[in-house]
Length: 201
Ligand SMILES: Nc1ncnc2c1ncn2[C@@H]1O[C@H](COP(=O)(O)OP(=O)(O)OP(=O)(O)O)[C@@H](O)[C@H]1O
Image (cartoon, rainbow, N blue to C red):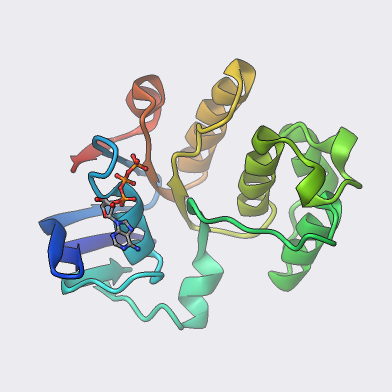
């Protein structure tokens, strides 16, 4: 699997955010997108998953122009963007069971809950979680479903020191399992430890 862009350009209301951008993450590779606040990292990741549409150039999935409505794309790509939202009346563990069921996943929901440190709050509703716990739920939702591509916007945000260390190891394990990873980050240590290549915006 691979996900990337060719000669990509995008702007909001005619104001350019990025232009002439080309890169791809292949199976077992991680590409980090870095840059200052407002540089366009989140926007680029939204284009990658079809939540925004490029003004020019192409999103390439498996080397072919992206059809974000295709079942194959939806089945392959797990993403956590900066606008994650949850059902207010569905508990943590129910969110995970629901997504696992939707994707006919063989992942062990209880094991993922434990790995992300949410076992103790499994029966709580999302509005009762801390911001770090809500972020962990977003990450858990990526890991409870099948995936061959991971797109993560600042996955390190709101994680404590142990959480960042876990995240680094988890992303390395994803790469080792052949997953293609594209992530935006402000964490230089994470980028250095995980990324094969860096895209600077
Ligand atoms: N919906 C929108 N409408 C208009 N402008 C937008 C919109 N979303 C983002 N922008 C602008 O596009 C630029 C890129 O924003 P983006 O969120 O992609 O940056 P970022 O690199 O992810 O920043 P950060 O590091 O702060 O998360 C910014 O100047 C921002 O103000």
